[in-house]
Length: 219
Image (tube, rainbow, N blue to C red; front, side, top):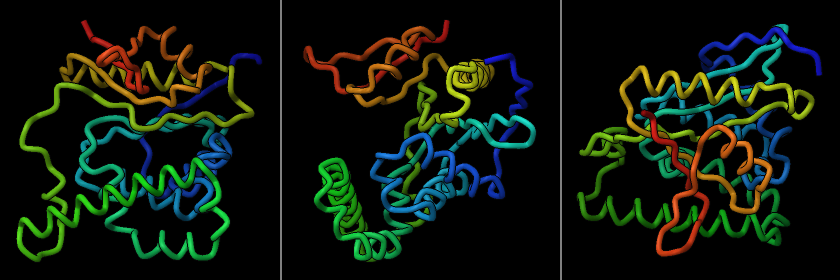
């Protein structure tokens, strides 16, 4: 593919419909995608408006979103999304009951239930009151700058857009004084793993087992 004129800029809420459509195209088999475009849009909306310290970057070609990266410090990226949208998400499952037969979706649903149970226990311990954004803040500052999600339009994969987004995110992390970066990848996604390793990322192995966490130290 010939060199493209790519413009990278921060994303805002008006970009979220395009972000959702790109996510669906890039990850057609993900559990979030199977819940529908609106569920995907709400997920990324929470990453923008929640109690996070997020740097959301979009790569544009001729004003078309062709890639994005959500990075930074996330406080309740999934738990907050579930707590805020549980009623809507329940409706999504009820109108798509066949999803329960999908092993990937079933695994993610089990994880979501565990997260919601943990939130409920936190509510009980703190006495009956609604969770607010401050409840997702960590008391300890994070030393690691996380990559939550990165995606490239399938029609533009192989054009260097993913590398550009990762390099921009790394530059932001360095500028903000972080000593390392982290991300989690599906251990079965060999293509993504090779991509990260070419950029200097290393697998984080605990007790001789690797579960998908990767790290990059920033010298």
